[in-house]
Length: 464
Image 1 (spheres, rainbow, N blue to C red):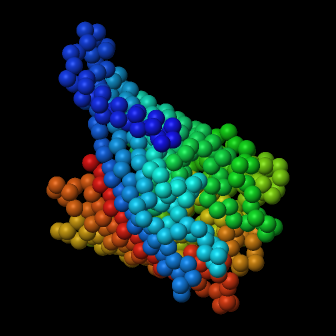
Image 2: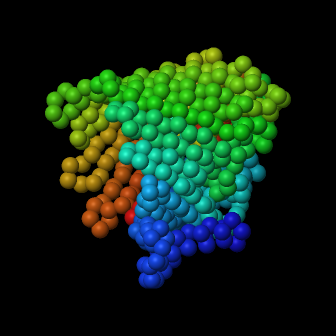
Image 3: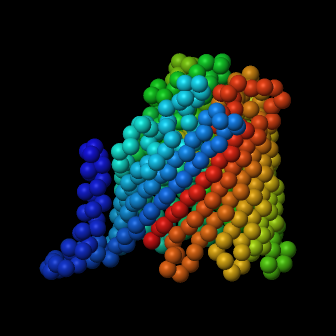
């Protein structure tokens, strides 16, 4: 077993044994020491289990795939001591069964989805994988906190993106400040990331390019993996709720030597009666390259010098306790590609649909309609989403990083979250169907695992 696996195993097991041992031992005569032991014994231990089945069926019999992933983990958080607390979690994952990740000689296209249930760095390995996902010290006072170390954050640009075995995690310092009424401030510095579908930790520059890199604006293959210079990410987000019914979000992210991205979003809710309400929102995102975008060599940089992009989004909907319905729109202008490392999180757009993204494209129009229903007496909910995504032509590589054709996408999702003795568990079934909208006959590399395909996901989570 690799040293890192042994280390994380010992570390997590010690957190299980330590509270038991100290609870049965004689308390120390030193007041401070005694209080520390009590803090440890009163800490909370939370086991978790995750099973993920994924099956992708491409048009014809060209290249289909399936995979079963199983993961278990345990997390521990101490009780607070003089406003301080400790947190740690370890995760172990294994591929139970899967189709081959070696491309068929007739169709030499690497699997795009199922491979994400294993370690992308070493997809052929069937060894037990482990990740020390959280390891932090937190200081909390009133409603605010400062957390230092490995943790999971949820922002528009870096987020868990819960579509694989484990979420994206970060290492750094994160401040969550809520001491002013109707105001939330989040600010932090991140120096390392462990992307979903990986077990290792990477520096900010190193983390960019682990996922497929696509094409440079001149049509050559991107080659920024291992070639980006960046010392870290600075981020600040402010949410204001003073002007009801509006809620305003302002986010700014600075990636050292690479790019700057800002977002302004406004959301509103207007009650129609005591049981229902209208919902609306608008969003604006703008980003610019910093210096050379990560590397002086244009063939190895992430964002070309002088590059920029803009996106505009809007949503409108109605909901009550049982029904939710939305119509969402997003426009990425033709000024440039919207870029955000896929290793870091999912798109913040209102039109985001699981299993596909619009990152890497410019000159995009997206329209998505969603309707969801929650049963009254049964902990069951269902959602249907239909999207239309007009992308730039395949030969306009300056705006089409991943050579993706325009497509329509349908998602059906059903989630069951039982109560009682099964509380903490959830069962989700997600069906995805994508159809290409190009009239021309396209080569397999533009179709397989991109359009004219369907996919089934079955996910079981248990968190105690």
